[in-house]
Image (spheres, one colour):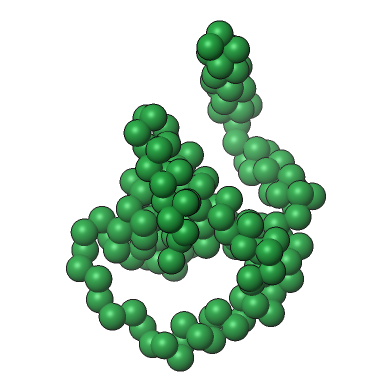
Length: 153
């Protein structure tokens, strides 16, 4: 269950008209904090991000599951379930308490380095490499416009 503070920050982002991925970023930030605090670990930064995205979808952020071909079928199905859970599909009794406990215990055994600054920088760089020059350029221009707008205020 996400912290109330996180949900409030995500709602504030929504009110300000920010993108669903920005709203989901609040849940990812919370996940990184949990790992740094030692609540649990993650095998990789990508896994930590996936946990945060899943929490965001379950909390009702309008973040649709990835399209076919972008990720594995298993990931898509999981994202679809989380999205439906956060968008009015009736909440069913989750799998089993034993399985939930086992997965929580497994996460506790994972290393904490997934949330380190170096690991996150590596993840960001590899994610950027997968995007085209045109996409990166558009993002940079958008960021420059945002900085300009914030400097004006």
